[in-house]
Length: 518
Image (cartoon, rainbow, N blue to C red; front, side, top):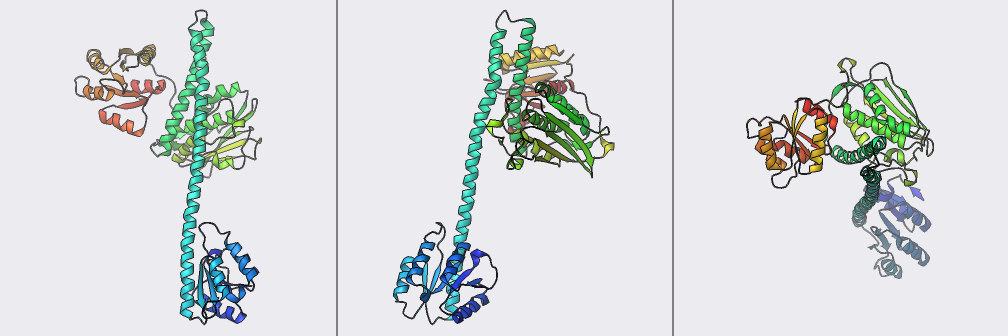
């Protein structure tokens, strides 16, 4: 076999003639027309080359002995559904030979070319065959793309089903102790310190549920590009320490040893303090979750070459090589058998990747394999130290002197929120429907109205629009307090005249800061 070049396998025309002279002449003609050609000396070569790929086969009928014609037919019969290889048979004059008739009957896509053959006829026939073959390749491409899409859909469907099962599991976990705790609190003999422990437990479980729901809403908005991050000049070191404190209780509960190595000098970064805290809290919580009790976690940060590199490392269960990239995809978790009792929905790392990207950075996962621990490295651009602002103190602000109207048709929600606001020092009035809210607002003249949206009769949008037309309530601080938190919901509340939009249950620190700032 004599190959002229190394063209793409799918583009080659295979040539098997009766004599070397015919092969040389035909090869020269085809190559002159820029048709890649592979000259085969035996039928064995043809069969071997077909396995590599070909756009057409040109074969002299003399080479189609009964045994080889049967072998070639068997090879062509194994073609995939999209493939129908053009076979051009060079016949003797008349094209009535038994060999030609058998070829037409057994080899599929056959074109008979009678000799002596004009050059133009040969080139036209081969060019037509290769163009038809190219269309087959296009069909192949479409089929492969469809198969990939179907495989992706099956994988997405599998992840969705697993996610729904996980979501049910994760929501039932905190609901179970909360239900038991509520029954215990209803018993007269449960008082004092024991009742306080039950309340603490219920608050912890409720916080877990709120975090699950918040993560679901957050990842949806971030991955659709509906979230902007602030670009404040910050020192990353206090943010990292805040993340540590957020996870301190779970770290201590698991008896982990935490080693923190942070520089004494600032690590200036342009970003959103809340979002960055969310990033590193998620990474630390992930390390806690996937490290066996009594394990070790390391948090370190340094600046180099205009970048900040933060490392969260553990000696936990580690990652299989295939998980290092996939772990950041939506709803991906390690195998169920390796999950920790704290659970999770498999969206924390998706949030991390998206939020880091919004800060102009990147995040990577590294592991030497299962059982060897993991390391997550966040790389962020370094900012100018001169621009760094001191971190603001955290904690709820007192609301002494503030007059707040709480409006919600859910009496339990309205009463408990009003009670909490009163403890924080506010003077509070409550209304359980829209029309009563208007009357109460006129009599009470609140500084802030916390207004539910989905009330029967007169909903929150109508109440807000009505308040904006009345003196002296026209400039009252209106906060939409609702379970609806999509971008379109924010736009709709702005259009109705609301100043702020908060999803239920409200973050009390944020709410008190919002109200006290007015």
